[in-house]
Amino acid sequence: MVIASRDPFESRDVDQLYDLAAGIVREGNEVTVFLVQNGVLPARFGARSEGLTKLSARGVKVLADEFSLRERAIGGDQLVSGVTPSPLDVIVDHLAAGGKALWH
Amino acid sequence: MATTITFALMDPPYESARSTTAFRLIDIAARRGYNVNVFAYEGAVATPFAQQKAHPNAVHGRDAAQENHPLPKDWVAALMQAAAQNGGKLDWVNCGLCVDERGVAEVIEGVRRGTPGDLWRMASESQGTLIIGTR
Image (cartoon, rainbow over all chains, first blue to last red; front, side):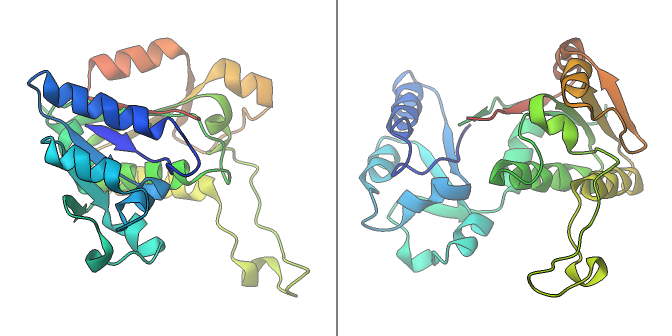
């Protein structure tokens, strides 16, 4: 799991994080990108969201923290295709199951 | 075997949304009855600092009680209590060198002093570990 907390409008390295996730899938692995804090901002339709759309099309599961979305008044109907609202519990589930997680 | 999760935190209190997210993650795990390890280093060692004090807000004309200023040390204590109530434990270790640099050795009950070696041991004994570093 890759946890994306940064806003791509502010941090250019977000694109590199997306590339990392795409590469993990390209190598035959499964990966989830979990958007949290300002990392949810590109999940809005039209807001530099093409990176997330491409990730989803390549087989990367993309989740967005429900609380972070609510904090920023981003409704479910504003999300780009391929991004699914999710509780933060998913990260704890992943860690408890022995999964690896990278915070960015 | 009980489920154990380790978090490493680096941000000082009051500075970053990362601290809030970390508290949310710890809260979820604690309420599930998991054992939760926290290794706090750099500015995060001030999170359970016992001398944090609520203050009034003169600009808005409110006293300390009315202001009800949140104190991270109280949140750490509440998380420890939540873990215990649900059959788990929150083991919070502050990096000793980081504590000495900042003069924040006086911490709430339940917080202990350690070294980066503790983080290695915690991670070795956990199902999962998440390092939340400062950018």
